[in-house]
Amino acid sequence: MTVVSIFKLALFFTLTSTLVTISLQQEQPLLLNSAEQDSVYQVLSSINSATNWRTLFPDDLCSYPPHGVVCDYFTDPKTKNVTVHVTELSFGYVSDFTPNPSCSPNSTFSPLLFTSFKHLRKLFFYQCFTQTQAFVPDIPTTFGSSLEELVFINNPAFVGPLSSITGNFTSLRRLVLSGNGIHGAIPNAIGDLANIEEITLSRNKLGGKVSVNLSKLKKLKILDLSGNGFHGNVPSSVGNLTHLLKLDLSSNGFSGKIPESLSNLQALDFLDLSFNRFGNFGVPLFLAAMPRLKEVHLSGNLLGGEIPEIWGNLGGILGIGFSNMGLVGEIPASMGLHLRNLCYLGLDNNKLNGKVPEEFGFLEFVNEINLENNNLSGRLPFSANFTAKVGEKLRLKGNPELCVDEKLSHRESVGELKKCSKPDIPNPVLFIGFLILGCYHLHHLSFFYCCFGVSGYFWLD
Image (cartoon, rainbow, N blue to C red; front, side, top):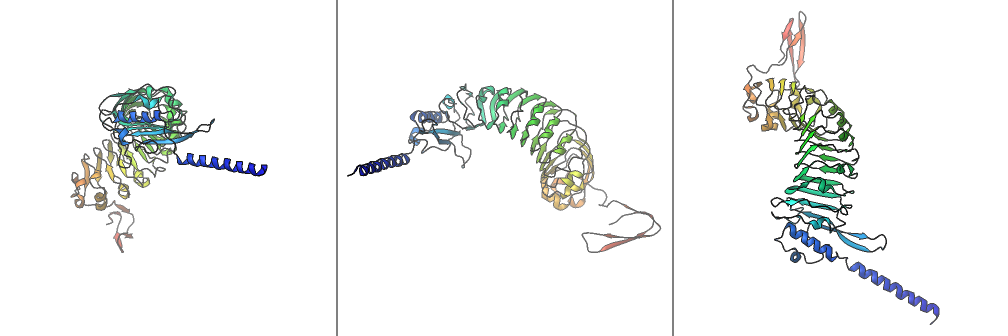
């Protein structure tokens, strides 16, 4: 055997051995290290100690995990070694489509969550801390650089200051803390979350003035601070959030004037500032310059003034909540002309007068109109088909001078209105001249009426 033959044979065995090694590595899945696996078991026991998680899921928790535990592979940039780690932990049964591990009434919050999972991207709790008080633990500064979603929903016994939760979350995209016992003011650190896309802090016990500078949050799409105790002026820096789609500041104590800077939010489709203490500055005229709005709610703020003529470019609006705002004057007919996609209109508990615009009767998609407790008068201009379509969500009581025709009086939604004393007669047309022949085409019939007369008022019927 020659030297060349020996070399070729050696090369063949080397390559074969390498391929076999690679094949064996591919066939044997990477396993979660024992320390991290044990931490997952301990966390599962903290949220539901009645379940024996080690018996129920005895195998590798990345290969055969319970729903809500997600892993991923990571490659060391220096050694090129591949390891597997837990990246998502979700607890609390939401639905059959997301059957996360259910929580018991005495669930506790394990500090291991912030020490044992260095690669965690998502942490989710739904209705887990409902009875036994669970305090926000101290978060090590070394944790959180990879966290993208932090979600706690409906955990009233989860308590602690908001400043303890924000941590070093430089990669955070979603911060959702809704319906918990979180208290305190919004820390300045919130303004440094440059990658954040959603901040929902609704239904907590937060308060104070919102003094944090929000200008750096260029990617923010949702800002929801509703259902807290914030007060003072809304910071004008909110107007710098030009990618914002939803702004909900409802049910707080914000006061002063609604900032004009909100007109910069050209992508906004949901605006809710209802039930605050904004002053008597009228309905903001800048709404006319926000053509993508789908819903606008200002109810419960005594803004006063008349409903402005701002609806020409707002044809995409689906819902308007202008209840209990101290509004006066007549309802603009232009609302019925331009808001062709409107589904909900709330103008109740104001001081509006005049007639109900007949243009409202042509709103094809409307399913609720609330005009209760105003000073509206005259004949209700809606057809039988329209009142039947809206049904009991056509709310008109509390307008003593509003009346309804006999043919509609049996409808439940208008049954509380008085019956009109005169038949439905159109407006008069003035005829001038000694003798005039006029023909009036009734669009819903196939013939003409011809009218003869002398100078004066004639009723076309």
